[in-house]
Length: 115
Image (cartoon, rainbow, N blue to C red):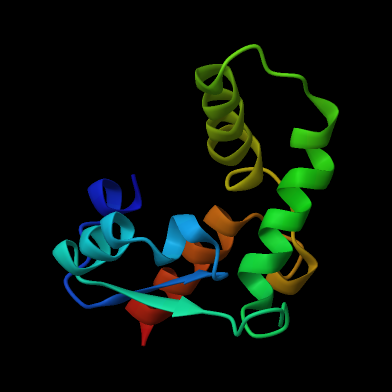
């Protein structure tokens, strides 16, 4: 979705841990095909990619552990809704100046345009 929405011209770093879903050939092929660069934490070191680790920890704590999903599709839809309808547009982050990620990014690009 990020590729479709933003259509990046420059390489984009994708942070993850070393889970099999991120080290597998299919994912690595996808990254190369879309000009994405993999950034993985060292095995067992959650501090290397603290932003990614923090996000997934938060997603699990605030959403997934509270749910029982009937199907994988139900789980995917719920995670999608959590990210797209709450986390990115509404959830305030202290590290972003107590604004949502979308608002933070909007302000960032406004600052760049005014320089």
